[in-house]
Image (cartoon, rainbow over the protein chains, first blue to last red):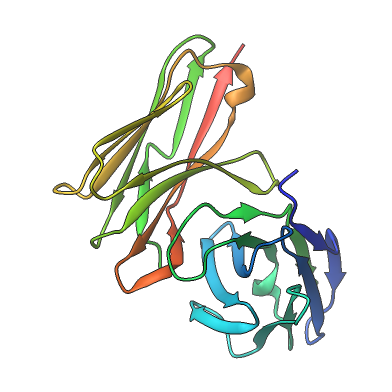
Length: 114
Length: 112
């Protein structure tokens, strides 16, 4: 158990809909990272937050947005969903914010868009 | 886009044998990490090697790093069926230390 909690574990929805994925980082970790894993794209870095502030951005679509709240949990919002958004979405956390170290991953949220 | 590519894409060995996976990357790095992923599960950190290190050991794992060739290898000795998983290398680049970029992964199958 990494200590990172993601909900929901599975989500099935239709094209055009909007979903919110939630992540609670390990106790004490200030950084939260979001990754998308799909068969054709592999593991793609989406975005990182550190203590409530956006710190780094990757291949995140404009239809996607994220935030980190004062209690350090984070949410990833996916809107106008397309079939190609079906993937496993991982949240990870770490203590550090400006220097790479070990990431602790949650078990992921599997999104299926029909 | 992915920074690293693992080779081979898939590897099947017998229990007790050693498994070697390679990772090549494109730009200079601060450090390189290896992660393991059991099917459909979250990734688990295995080992981190800094750009000024050439070799590192952790239990049955041995990692090497050759920055001149922009490559790393992960050796798992005396493999066990429980080592069956996908293995990913991940790198960060100077100036982008918050963006840990993962490679394409090697799927290791250890036959009992």
